[in-house]
Image: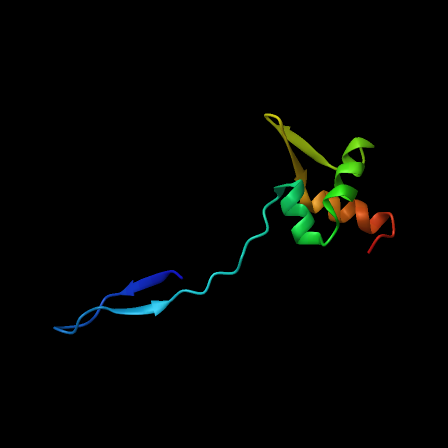
Length: 80
């Protein structure tokens, strides 16, 4: 949990307030992260990658899935 320090006035000590953060969905995710986000199995995503149907790039030896393009591809194929 992250806190933001709010300056107090006068002699009172500073108080703490919670900062609510919404999780950001990254553009590029690993296959495992994409599996967790979409609910698709890792095996399915890896098979898509082998068939060159999974949008993404290599970062070194790791394949990074382009999440927005994957959603677009899946919706065009009727896999909603």
